[in-house]
Amino acid sequence: MQYEGVLRKMQTEIGNPIQYFLVFEDSFIHMNQILDKELEISFIKYQCLNCGEDRPIYRQGCCRYCFFEIPSAGDWIMKPELSTAHLDQEDRDLEYEKKVQLQPHVVYLANSSNVKVGVTRKSQVPTRWIDQGAHEAIIMVEVPNRYLAGITEVALKDHVSDKTNWRRMLTNTLEDLDLSEWRERLKPYIPEEVADYYMSDAEELELHFPVLQYPSKVKSLNLEKSPQYKGTLKGIKGQYLLFDDNTVFNIRGSEGYYVGLNFQ
Image 1 (cartoon, rainbow, N blue to C red):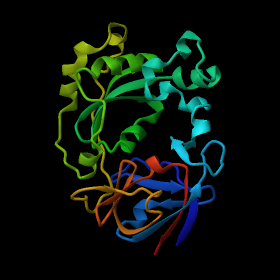
Image 2 (cartoon, one colour):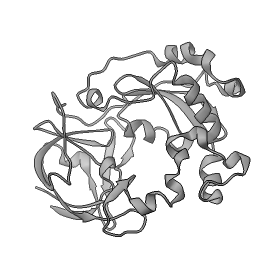
Image 3 (cartoon, rainbow, N blue to C red):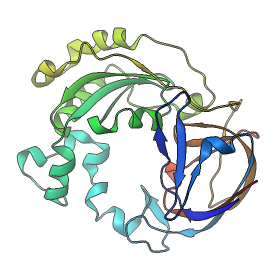
Image 4 (cartoon, rainbow, N blue to C red):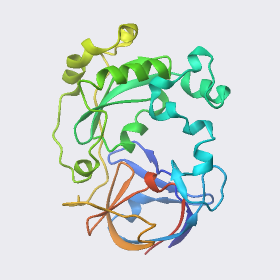
């Protein structure tokens, strides 16, 4: 079957295993159904997710011009501690920033390659954990805005990583850890103004990914360097497709690429 469209991060549904869907403008592919099938990917052009123009993608699926203009790409996205909507201060678009920043957020611990701390909107649980390829995760605090979550993450980063080793995550070089124990260990480092939001009773969630075979090592597919690729799909983890020849393809990292997909 042949499909064509611009890449956006795969949509997911919780399950055992997690269900993945690659959604285009007029169609979608249930990716779990093409496991163990040969998939051909062809890079056709760029299509900025904001302006729709055929311009090289800079970051987050956007061309360089849009990335530095649109409110959804402000610095506070990657650095929540820079959020200012709670102070009624605008970065790029105060109405948008209030809508996103002034809603419940959680600070969590996840285990994808190692224990890491992260921040996400409460409405993005467990989607955020799935996208990171975490096989277990737990909420540490739930706060009313993004700023409080951000300063908590900053405080905890001195004691636990905030990064995922994506190569270890994709080769499944993991160990099961007691995240509730880690949560208690890190509790003393929560900022004083956030202490009352500590979630001592939140339970650890286990996640199961649709993988038939993990790569023994990983080589990343870059569509700009290799605009044509064909391989047998062996698994999906995080936002990565895993192929039989150890190739891995980051769908989210390729947002804004207009591609053709063909499988039998």
